Image (cartoon, rainbow, N blue to C red; front, side, top):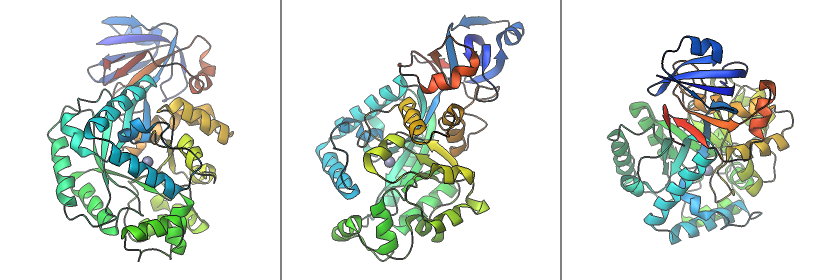
Length: 407
Ligand SMILES: [Zn+2]
């Protein structure tokens, strides 16, 4: 049992505390509050972290570490289809050793920038057996694509799941990611939902990301439509509805799914999202990737007004120049001035914890919660701390994951 004292403690479970302390036993916090009270009850070792603000470790709700070697390889301002084609060309030039290195470099970058949990989509599960234990809590979501039918996909899903179910000492979990409605068939989404139900797996998917995806489903036209038709995708599901209503109307997702992007929504989509059933849906906005790929504004206010659980992610280095949630918060703050600093911190702590269905385990410094936290240099009064955290530009020097100091 060790107690840690800090100048400021940001628990995300109440107001920030001047002169705070928390106690860790094994992987969990057992106490947190004002130092005089917490330490009066504590008989064990006390570590003084000094002039820092300690806060819950950051949770990146959408990332593809496979693509970490693609930083700077694609120019911004291209059409969405051209960006997809460029990624596919780059993927063909990479070996499994490159993907392994990409994933490990990605973990280092996330950790340097205060991330203690990542929702990572994997398109190269063949590297799993070679991958050392991740240094942070990681959910690996297996990417599922069947633009052209793949008869072996069930074995692929089952084999990957078996690997994770046998590696019980990993922090995090395993999930499925039917890539997007334009690359994964209805059958693929149904298979993912069935696996999710029977094996208790989380599902994440990209949806309504680009205007080209919207045009493909709503009008049966556009660059993405023509590109996929040429590849041999059956286009019979196009030309009648929006991408989101295609997923919801055909029962291809449920309210527990985590949806990345939702940039392109129409009035009827918002009507559907206003229904009680969908109000708990988790949505991941990736501010810097959005700037790289899209012109239309992400409808953040309309989604948060309806109570939807909007989180932040970095997406990959194929559309971003860093894996840094502090930069993402600053980009969101610039684009949505009504967002307060505390709202931004919720989008990378308590809200993604809710998306993972771990709102009573992750994202807060409170008794019973998993002990994931970071320290940021800080010397001022506690009431300025949220804004100071958003403005942090320094690498994180002290980090705890699962009760262990890892930095
Ligand atoms: Zn993505």
